[in-house]
Length: 468
Image (cartoon, rainbow, N blue to C red):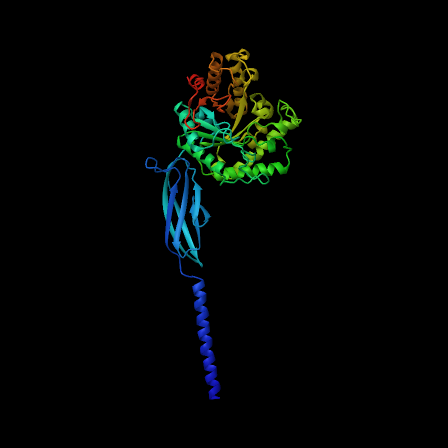
């Protein structure tokens, strides 16, 4: 009996040692101590020594760190939001200079610690499309660059171009970009899904160009350009809608925290199945006046518009432009958008604008045109004024996204060419429109370079004459 008691005692001691060992292992695997030393840092977008309260966008990145913390959440403007890896970017919208308080909670095993911080921001009043279109004034196109690769996409050459035009008094740049259409053998977006590859070298150069233009205080218009996978085959089906929506969802999400000076143009020159004037080998396309073509144009514009707005943040009030069909022709605005009811947002979105293009009359403006076909300043101004009248009727601001005169070989430093450019610009600005002159550095070129890096205004003097 005594021996049995000794054995039982040893068994109990062994069990206790084993239990304590397991408990020790368990506690080492799960740290149940409370979080401590919670710190919050803030990064205000656009903050500089001169502008400590930011660039007016109201965007702030919050980052939290703490000892023994597994998750974090933040209370900002009355909303409790989770923080991913202790980080959250938030855009405040209350205009003026205001101080906001945020509170972060760090968690670990049911135990918490709180800390608060304040951030002072100067937020610009949200401008409507009419405000921004007017402020954009005169600008230029960075043509044949990110849309087809004819011109170099290097930031060195693009900086030279932006600096040159800014010095000439221009206030915005339109950057045509092809996303799911191949440029030099590659695409920015997956040709099956529409997902954008933000590591693509061409995209990184594009981002550098956008950032540099914004740093020069220019407005930037970003579009989807030579998307013939869509234009030539669009039938309104989910196959095309989902892919196009995915492209814009990715673009809009990526640039969501950018200032309102970045503007989105849904689709450059709807054409093909959406209606175009000229024939194209291998295809039979409807005229722009076709009811089906008009319906498809409205539909694809709404697909892009909806995708952008759905990303929220700064894109809730970002200016979005839509174009009529027939290559964005100014004469089609009344057909595609005769009233507010046909517009995305049903005419209730004060951050929506319409972009139109014109190279009319082609016999004068086209690269094979002639000065003898110039219809006169009165005729040129009348076409623009007609668009302005319709703009007032439906209450939507207008950007002329492309216009110009091209020549394959004939000189353009002529009095009628100068008068055309001057008349176009002055008529647009007089009607509170913005003017984006087309420059492809080719037939419609306005600048020149001997090394394709450093640019000067062309000896045709069109920019100088236009800006007078």
